[in-house]
Structures are given as structure tokens and as C-alpha cells.
Length: 419
Image (cartoon, rainbow, N blue to C red; front, side, top):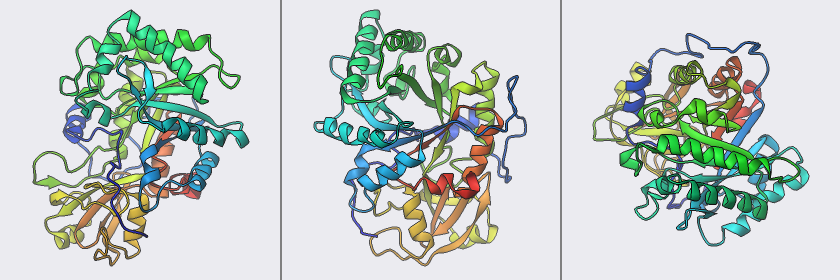
């Protein structure tokens, strides 16, 4: 593996700040006990829980092509095209005129390359994802969502621009990723809740009369996996106009906020099951939910690695976020590629200590390991990912989505043990 910083964020679409506390407050404290499913399974009439989920959505973080090690090459994109039913190019912007626009100069050429994957894969559909967590961090852009949804005129203009955008660039639909409506700390306003429903209604009308690649365009949305940010999403009304709602069921633990920290499972299966069941109980149809999965791990620097190893448990004391990996270059997160490298003796940084895992195991439906001496990482293997896929199957959900295809081969999550 080559070494070098990427200057980009591994989990660009996620919402790490206060997520752990928010989820704990909203749907119960993360369970320390190993589990493969939530205690109660909510099923709709006619659901047997035996059919495999139909949707396998893979998000493509376009900045991964610029990583100095393990970049997303055309060959890796080709492999993703063979493994997923849907791919979402991330991200486009809500522009200065409150219409759908490319986020950067040169993106149009990348769209063309990305969408050529469909030439030999007639079943593959592609989407353009709009927004992301970092969009609402930008002081110039962060209020564009709330201004765009505020009036009928601006909503209709955005809807029209979305049809024009996907038609021009060869996408099959739009994935809305506003993080987050209604949240004052994210430039949101209380009226965003009703205005977001009005936006998707306008977009659905526009999409009903459009044809892209011989089909009606897809309209989808990403939402939090529980927590207070979810309150501004009128899920039942949104679901009426969306092909699916993608629950971002990752980053349920991490080293954010002030130290000291406690390690945990960032893809805790019990927490995911409880959050999804709450959505189902609220009236969201199971076949309108796509469950999120992570192709990366959350990492911490341990206070006492030996004590953590002897306890062989996923909840240990930590002093800081984990060291940045050589490819993704973000403290507190490691791609599955980087985790695999460290498990087999490589270090977390350029010329790092290495030596493989001091201890490892599974708990809360996820894997954990102590790597590079003092680095605790929570992540998914093919086997633990299978518990999430089974959860989606049991609840007759539309499918699963992965953030992102840049950070693991599809076989790492959808391999033989997860089939």
C-alpha cells in the first residue's frame, strides 16, 4: 500500500457530531450484548421475510478518485457496477440560483464516465446524490436548502432543473441528502418539515412526466437512523412521493465531542433494528426503506490497550480519535481496505507500527479490533454485514445501501457469508 494524504473526508455524507448521544437519547442506549437482530421484528401483512432485498445501492464518493493510495479506478467502478443494482454519484449541489448544479468544474466529464457503466449493464440504474453533510458545513451554501424549499416558485424551479440535469447527464434519478432540515445548527428552520414534503411532491409530479432511459426517474432520500434530527422528516408523507427512504445506519458511535471517549459499535445491530422498527411503527411501508451499511470503521486511540484487550469487549476508554489512515486521511475513521491492511501487519500511518491485531472479536452485531498497538476500530466483516442484510430481509425492506464503494470491495460486505 502506498502512503500519502488524500485531503478528503472518508464519511463525507455522514453526520457524526452528536450522533451517538442523539441516538442513545432517542431510541435507547447501545447494547453491549452480542446480537444479530432486534428483539421485536415488525412485519407488514404478506411479508414472509424470506425474499432477499431487491435494492443494493452503492454511493460513490467522487473524491476517492484522487486518493494517493487505493484510488477509485475505472476497474473498481466496473466491479461496483457488477455488484450493485444502483449507484449514486456523490455529490451535486443546490446552486446559487437554488437549482440542481454540479458541485465542481469538471464533474460533467466524470458523470459521463460514471454513466457508461450502464452500457453493458442494462439492469444498473444510477442516481445523482445532492447535498451531503459537508454541504451544510459550508458557510456560503448551508442555507440554500431551506431557501429553496421555502416557496412554490423555488421548489418548482428545482424540480425542473432536476429533470433537466438527469436527462442531460444520463442519470436515472435523484437522491436528496439534506443534512438536516429543521436543525438550527445546520441552518434549518421549523417550516422545513412541511416544505420538504412539498418539494418531493413537486419533484414527483415533474418526474411523472419525464422519461430517462425508457423509465420514470427515481426519487429517493437519505435520512438519519433515529435521533432528534429525524424529527424534521415527515416520513409517512415523504414516503408517498419517494421510491425509497435510505436510513443512514452508521456512525452510531465515534470520537466526537470532548474527551474522554468510550469506544463502541458504530453499526450496532440492536440500535439499527430499534430505529428501523420505529420507522415501521410510525407507518412507513417496509418496501420504502433502504437500510444503510458502512464500508468503513470508526476508530479511537485507547487509553489502556492492554486492559481493553483483556476485557475483550467493545466498550473501552479512549483519549482521542483514531489516527488517520494513509489513504483516506481522516482521524477517527478507516476504510475496510485500511483495516484489512492493518490486520495483516501494516501500520495506520506511513511506516506505522503494524503487527496485526492485539485483540479482536464481535459484539453488538459488529466486529472490533485493537490495531497498531493502541487503535480500537469498530467495523463490519462479511459475516457481521450479513446480520444487517438479514435484518433488512426479516423486515421486508426494499434493500440495503452502502457508504461508500470507495472504501471496500463489494465482496467484503456482500460475500458468500452474506449471500
